[in-house]
Image 1 (spheres, rainbow, N blue to C red):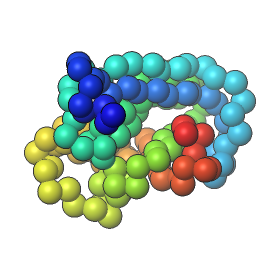
Image 2: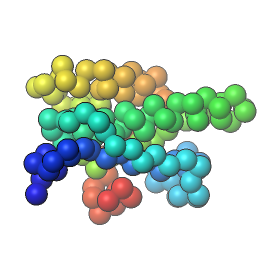
Image 3: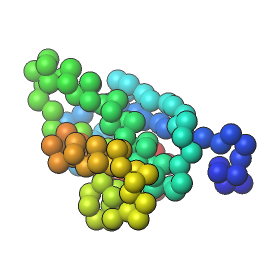
Image 4: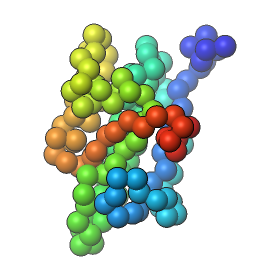
Length: 132
């Protein structure tokens, strides 16, 4: 049964934060923080739900990035991996969403942070995606 049809269904957010070198496919060298939350709002599409997940994880990463910078560890763009190609396309200006008003705050915030080179949001196929 699709999650939208379930009683009181909510989206779930998971994130695993670890430190690594500035590599294309960084090895997981022990977690420093994990996110496990329930999205209270009901999203109208899988892409919108994924943008919400990326947003929650990216907002969580900002103070971690700032702390590392203050400790003298210059931070390259933090890689954020997604398994939703549409959400990735929206953030990277490859897709223009039809219902952008519902996603406004989240996707503009993510676009701005990526433009500032705080984050590098990218898509990886399910088999290679650690989140799957």
